[in-house]
Image (cartoon, rainbow, N blue to C red):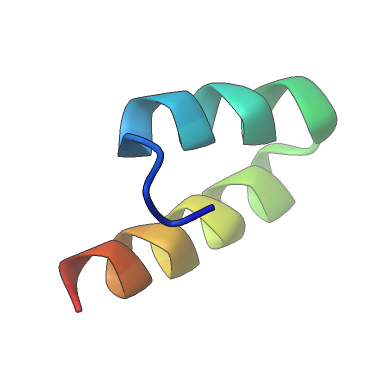
Length: 36
């Protein structure tokens, strides 16, 4: 899961979540994990 590019993860999240708030929170969490 973490091997996928961040852009692909963001597109998947944007497709699964229509709420901008949840989408942004999930993206921030993934970016944090990817950086580590």
